[in-house]
Amino acid sequence: MAFEFDRRHFLRVSAAGAAGLAIGRTVRAKDANGKLRLAAIGTGGKGQDDLQNISSSPRVEVVALCNIDDTKPHLGWAAEAFPKAERFSDYRKLLDKANAFDAVSVSTPDHMHAPIALAAMSLGKHVFCQKPLTHTVHEARLMRETAKKHNLVTQMGNQIQSHHAYRTAVKLVHDGAIGKVREVRSWQAGNMRWMLAATRPPGSDPVPPSLKWDLWLGAAPERPYKNERYHPFNWRAWQDFSTGQLGDFGCHILDPVFMALELTAPTSIEADAPPLNNDTWALHSKVEYQFPGTKRTAGETIMVTWYDGEGHMPDRDGLGLPDSYELPQSGSALVGEKGTLVVPHVAEPQLFPEEKFKDYKVPIVEEINHYTSWAHACLGDGTTHSNFGYAGPLTEAVILGAIAIRFPKEQLLWDAEACQFTHHADANAHVTKEYRQGWELPTV
Ligand SMILES: NC(=O)c1ccc[n+]([C@@H]2O[C@H](COP(=O)([O-])OP(=O)(O)OC[C@H]3O[C@@H](n4cnc5c(N)ncnc54)[C@H](O)[C@@H]3O)[C@@H](O)[C@H]2O)c1
Image 1 (cartoon, protein in one colour):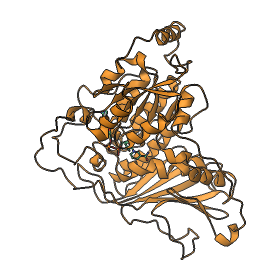
Image 2 (cartoon, helix red, strand yellow):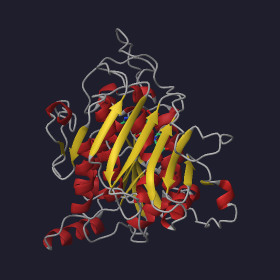
Image 3 (tube, helix red, strand yellow):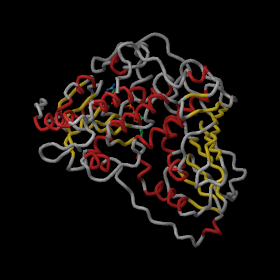
Image 4 (cartoon, helix red, strand yellow):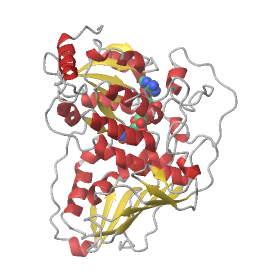
């Protein structure tokens, strides 16, 4: 379906403009049938799941699809499922037809989240964007500020937040089940199956005709195409496109910790990890974050320690767990004044000591549909919980840990308001990054 000139949208935008309002500030999206017109960018991998979930609402109409790869697992399946949607390989061409859609989903590799989402938000479009929200701390800050400035409905794709298990864990802490929290340990001890080699493979492979490699690279520095090394999925290994295992899982696993404790920004971050090369991320790391205390914490500060790497489990000392209890492969343990809450990723939370909590009535917390709740909020119905006002600071904290991994055993002091490290020019250089010429971030 070719985009048609949308007079209703034009009038809405003109009226907003005439009133001196930013586009999208006061109006909620809707087409003539009251549906949200969605443009989906990055439709393979997790993008397939995102698109299927968002479009499961009868109130959503998929009007545009964008992918740099035409093959069946990427654009192909979506083109078959939504034959009326116009197809693009370059998101900039899609955004040129801004009057034809109300909202975008961004499910590309991480290095392109901010360039795409910021450009869409500057046009007044509501955004669903995968986790981690961005590739740099600076981008996360801009995403939060831009969503607020244009009053847009946003949601990061950390869908486990809406799962009843994570929601129950947050409620248990808010109900005071374990009292005020003294310390948190979070971990992801699974493998990194995307880490195929430590350094760049030599040479290049022919780019398949179905793939637009230059568009895949986007804002990242140029490098030759190699089969399977980057696209799809294995881009996670590389510093140019991802923030490593912490970036991949931190916005999931640290999410219930952030929500339960109402954390803000860390004041200091210190990592222990093997030295990084110029290309790939570390195979394991430990990152100690100190956050200001909140009404949910026992002290004036609280330590949250992250562990990742295959088989890299947290220290059990002080967790108050029975020897017979095997920790899940990934999750968090919150040590409170009255007990410990283990929050597996993703399963029912567990309270310890078991004897003490055997009669505790665990609240029943309903699941939320993370995807359609965003779509419906764009239509003015309800709200989102992982909006960029929340997901921005969470992502900042996660990426600050990835920066600390670059400076093992150095305590980095973070000034959140200034969005910079105190007295550490080398670390500050990683708060943002260089963009490939012609791919600089849009003005928002
Ligand atoms: N929430 C979750 O549980 C979860 C799970 C997996 C991945 N993710 C996130 O989803 C995103 C995608 O991860 P993935 O594993 O699916 O990666 P992937 O490489 O398997 O898939 C990315 C898709 O985007 C397309 N694409 C790449 N660059 C594009 C561009 N510039 N424009 C349009 N399309 C483009 C690719 O062709 C592919 O179809 C990442 O941000 C990742 O962190 C989230």
